[in-house]
Length: 453
Ligand SMILES: NC(=O)c1ccc[n+]([C@@H]2O[C@H](COP(=O)([O-])OP(=O)(O)OC[C@H]3O[C@@H](n4cnc5c(N)ncnc54)[C@H](O)[C@@H]3O)[C@@H](O)[C@H]2O)c1
Image 1 (spheres, rainbow, N blue to C red):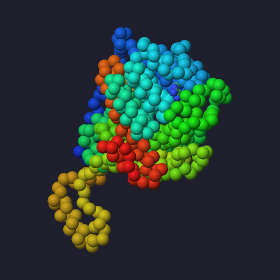
Image 2: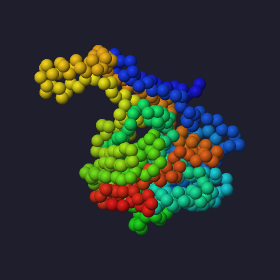
Image 3: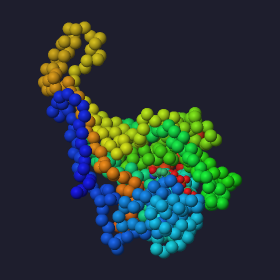
């Protein structure tokens, strides 16, 4: 059975629908995007190693078990207990080390998965490219603008395949959305909005510190490379997202997923022109550098993008993205796409004519009816219907994204979320933070490759 054909269509909304009132979506069969559905010849097996086997690294190792034709041959992490966690995740006693250069020296490693904190992406990726390894690097690709361009240059110099880790870009739901967007069914889209919200200590990155964490079990000095020196601090090691030395707060953690999804669906291959941000640190005042509410409006040539994250309320959960078109709205939420056409059938004006005397209103309605013989009054009492597409049960965009990367390693065809794509969306995160911290409108100067206030 082709699991990809298990589409779910639902039509919601009651009432009689006039012929032609609802644009019919042509949901074509998705291409074979699901990792689990592919076959790979034994000679095409890719041997990879994981650098950084914390939360995400382990998630990726588990997901790699679903990807055909790949084999994990080594793992690397600065914290010893994560060697054990990685071996459990990949269900194999692969060699483990604290020093990623040992892995890069191995001739039998084709590719590396890099899931280290953001301030270390540049160093590890540049070294991996120089060692001739293809790279899957977690999002956001860069910790700052110069890091992003250094990574782009290293990939080009080493002639490597690189994919960044915003998995929505490989999702069959987002592929559907891209198809629908480019079909014109939405009309013209001038505003896209997205959000990602949470309401818990874990959501605010206050992760528990394991009982064996110490300077003996963690290579603290290696963690600090690329960041200011400071004494061992387990909170900084395990909750690095809160601190600007290592992460980029909500923008780098969550905006990047929204931006990657939007760029993919709308076919954007550039950096936003400018960003305006507001927000504040209202609740999680634990010494962190970043706000717990952030709202940014981006200018792109043909539309605006409005994003927010709130760590204090999660009634709007998941990562909703709404593409608001003149003919319809497309909403992406987790594994579901909903398309709701706008009711744009022409109708006589009924609002401003409330201020007219009855005789003029009557005359206007008679004139309107004469000039618009169709539709009849009954037909324009319609309710629009929504159409919904959901991914098949058990579908994982995480394994799909990895499968796409490993396919690129085999075919040498650049993945969609390559280093240039990843650089564009990461710069979007840096624009948001620049605007917030400098209380200014952040403008992208593409010629100078820099952000200006
Ligand atoms: N795509 C997603 O949905 C997603 C989800 C979570 C995290 N991430 C990204 O994954 C990356 C890791 O995040 P995490 O939540 O797993 O963090 P984490 O703190 O749980 O794990 C990071 C690990 O990297 C290790 N590390 C740091 N520097 C290293 C080095 N030089 N060599 C080897 N290991 C090193 C640390 O010891 C740590 O165990 C980040 O870039 C994050 O933004 C992506």
